[in-house]
Amino acid sequence: MSGLNMSLCSTAIVAAVLSFSTSAQAQDQEAPPILFTNINVFDGFNPDLIMNANVLVEGNVITQVSTDPIEVDGAFEVDGTGKTMTPGLVDMHTHIMFETPEGTNSYQDEWDFGGGGAMAAQAIRENYLMKGITTIRDIAGNSRGVARAVQRGLLIGPRVYTSGGVLSHTGGHGDWGDRNDLTASDYGEIVQNSFKVDSRDDVIKASRRNYRNGAHFTKLMAGGGVASRFDPLEISAATQEEVEAAVEIAENYGTYVAVHAYHDTSYQRALDAGVRSFEHGFLVSEDIVKQMAAKGEEVVWSFQCYMSINSFGSYETMPDFFTHEQKLKGVAVGEGARNAAKMMLENDVFMTGGADMFGPGLSEIAKEDITCKVNEAGYPSAHVWKMHTGNAGKVLKWSGPLDPYPTYAIGTIAPDSYADILIWDGNPVENIDMILDESKLQLIMKDGRAYKNTLVDTDSIMYRPGSTRASITQYQ
Image 1 (cartoon, rainbow, N blue to C red):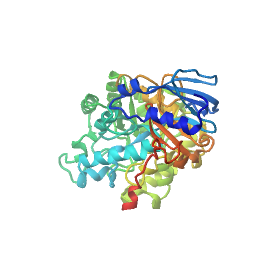
Image 2: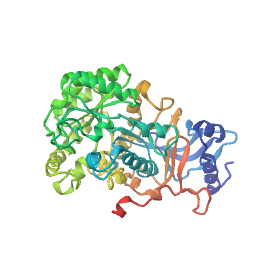
Image 3: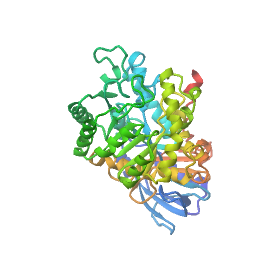
Image 4: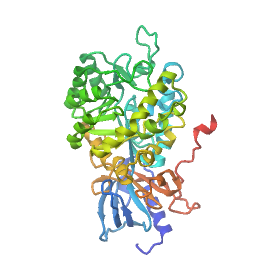
C-alpha cells in the first residue's frame, strides 16, 4: 500500500486506531498493524534522531523500529516524510487531586472530594493527554481511584502512577488543616490526600494502608515546603527512623520512596536510608550532589523548573493564593534553584522532571516546565527530552510488582514498548519551543489509540482536533 498518498494513509491509520472499542482486548483483536514509514525518530535516549525510520505498531505495542523496510501483510501505512516521532511526554511530578482553584487548602473549606475528582478528570484529559503528556506520576494526593479508572478505560487520560496520600508529620508540608486544630479535622486527610505520621509505627501503618488501596510508590515529606503554612523550609521533617521505616515497607512491596525536601540535612537522611527519588532540593550543597551522582541510576533527581525559577523567581510572580509567609519561602527557593540545577547537570546526576503545576492557569501550561529547563536553566534540549521520556520510563518501572503497566517499556520508541507516540511537524528535539505550539503536534497516540489527528484535512471524518475546550481561566 506504499503508493497511497498522505491523506489516504493518514485516514487509514485513524480508521485503524480510532475505532474505539469497549476494551483494550477488543481493540487488540480488531485493529490492523500500523506502519509509519520514512519518519525521523527520537527514541527517548539518543540525542541523534533515527533518520528515515520505519516503525510498526501492532495492537498497543511497538514491535519493530528499523531503517530497513518492514514488510507486514495488511498493515496501514503512514508516510512520515518531514515529520518527527517522539515518545509521549512524561510528567514525573503532578498533583492532579489539587486542580481546585485554592490548591491544597481547597478541601478544608470549599470543595468536597467529588468536586476535586471531577476537576482532576477534566485536567488529566485536557491539560495532559490532549497536549501530548501520555503518562504522569502523581506524587501526593489520593488519585488511586482515578489511576484505576484510567487503567480500566473508564476515564480518558494519561497513564497515572500514583503515590496515593503523602506521608507528612503534624505541622509538615502535608498538613493542610486549620491552625487551631485540637483534633484532626483536615478533610484532605480524611479522604487520604495525606497521612499524618509522627512515629515509626505511624509510617508503617500509613504505608501499608496506601499500598493496600492502590498506591504504586511512597511519597514522604522529609523537609519543609513553600505551599504549606506551618513548616519553615529549614526544618528536618521526618526523623531518620521514620524515613528508614518508609523505605523498609516500600522495599517489602518491591517499590521505592520519593521525598520532598530542599536542604542537605533532609537529603542526607534520605540518601542514608535508601530513598531513590529526590524532588526539589534547590538548597543542597555540592557534597550532596556528588553523593547522588556516585549512585548513578540507583537514585534520581526530579527537577521542577517553572515553579522554582519562574513562579518562585520573585515575590510578585508567586501564586495569588499563597500567603505572605509562603511567598517569602518561595523567593528563597527561587534564589537557589538555578545553582542546584547547574550542579546537578555538571555532576551528571540521573534526572527526570515534572511541572509541580496544579490548579487553573497552571496545569494548563504544564509543558512550559519542559521548555523552562532549556530556556531558563540552560539544559541541552535533547537532555531535557530524555528526562521527560526515556529516563522517566526507567523510574516508573521502579514500582516493581506494583507497576500498573508492567508488560512493556514506557518513554521510548523501541520494540516491546507501549505505543505512546507523538508526531510533530518539524523537529521539537532541536527546537524545544515547538512543543508549546499545539498545531505542530499532529498525532497523539496512547496505548495504540489516537486521540488527536490533524494529519488529514479538517473535512475528513477521521479528523480529530485534540482539545477543543477553551481555557477555564477565560471564564473567571
